[in-house]
Image (cartoon, rainbow, N blue to C red):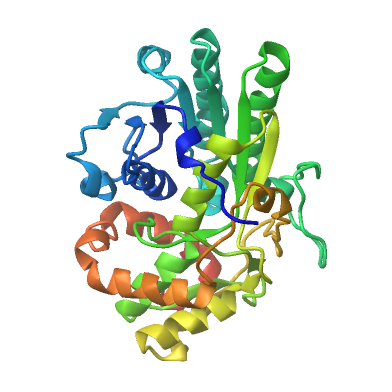
Length: 352
């Protein structure tokens, strides 16, 4: 199905929460690059994964404004919600490993923060509210099944549970208050500007520095890897064309790829030795397979444009060229988390 003209159907005044993060900033850059872009206010708390450098390309755009603040602050949210006709909520704690170490922060942002946004959208009669969710709410998916939007949530990590909780708030506001809700559930996303705690940027930057690549268990857990530009375009498509009260799976839709294969591909692309692979104890409650049915998205005319192999090669090239972006990030606080997370799983004497 040919891609439909979603750009002409976008709301004209957007509040994009978490817009300095990885996927949120890609979405903002995409929309502000349109011939007739909407006005965008970005609200971001600039916690560890939020980075204004992600938005440097649009910093001087006349349709862009940045506000430093937290979605859990009703006063800040209320004022901004009164200036727009739509909220797109990217703001979230979003890393499974961190959710195991500190689950309370995930409940605060992903559930309570979503509630604050929904209340503001309800009071100001917004045209749309888009909640950016995740395929992880489905939990572990046995082959050959692919998760469909009507499958029940079965979250198995504190992160997935917090995202499912945020979604449940959205559906409740849709049913009770007729708030115009749409939800996207994205698969594992990779590409430029991704904070280097996730598998692809962690493995790339470690490989470039000739550091070990820590792989959970046998590296057999499989994921549906989607390039961030395709993900951002999918979210924009749902915002413009999605049916209210529906969720949409956004994924590559190909056969999922296991972690060991990702590590080997990155080592080949960086010219590093396979001996850098380190198998560590598996993560508690590790989901071994995610796979999405994306037929509903394709009915809207969306389809991914980047296959994983060329997309990964381009991503490696970006991180190779942009040490100025990631080297400052991989410093004190990052390495404190890295050691806290991986060291207990590695065993005595293992070099990470």
